[in-house]
Image (cartoon, rainbow, N blue to C red; front, side, top):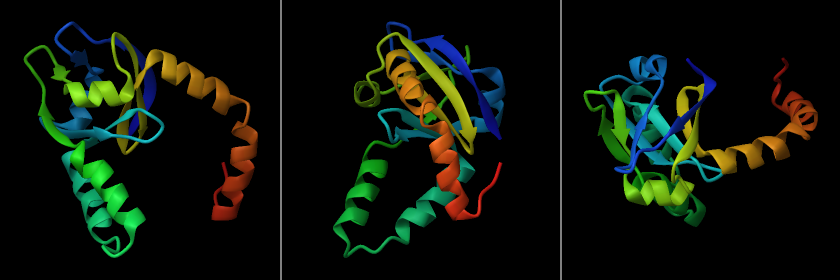
Length: 145
């Protein structure tokens, strides 16, 4: 399981060091794609396969399903680590997430998310105020903390 929050920097060549405990769980090969809320999602291959099967099962005749599937797959790229434990983030994905230098790498259960530091701080500040409201709504899904 991925959890925690880490501050990192992207170098001039677009490479990012990922925390060692995340690298171990991601394995030698993994997938990075556009995420929601203007971040990047990083999946180990086994989790990517599960997500791929779920996306394949969406009805092709529904435009929302096609759009969402395109969004995920068109931005996806299979990546590997360099010898220093860094990943080269493709320019299109860095642009999507607004990643320039300072970023935040967080663990979210079955995936890693990569955020620009400014976007993460704004998102966190906004979400922090509504955390209790969100928690109350989760009860509708038979979820309790």
